[in-house]
Amino acid sequence: KYRKNPTQEALTRGDDVTFAEFVEFITDDLNATTNEHWRPISQLCLPCKINYNLISKYETLVEDATEVLERIGIGHI
Image 1 (cartoon, rainbow, N blue to C red):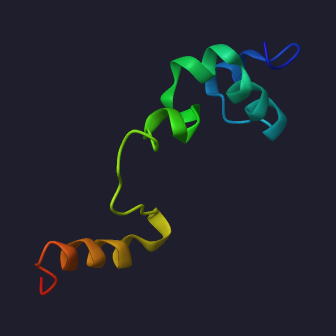
Image 2: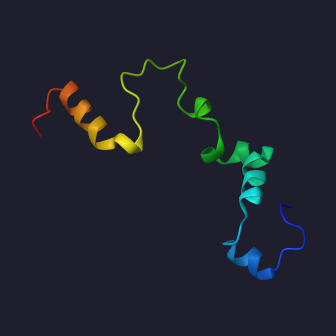
């Protein structure tokens, strides 16, 4: 579906996917609705329905965890 005439090895291993094929795969409507990893974050975290106190990201995990611990009164840990 995403590659014309793929070899059997390519179908079995799946480790030679091009960026264009990857983009086509994740923008396919079927994959977007069945695999939560490719859904918009707004469909997963409900930003309008939950009053978040902190929004974190992996790149600042240590700093964010420190902030959480301080907010709940156990920053000394």
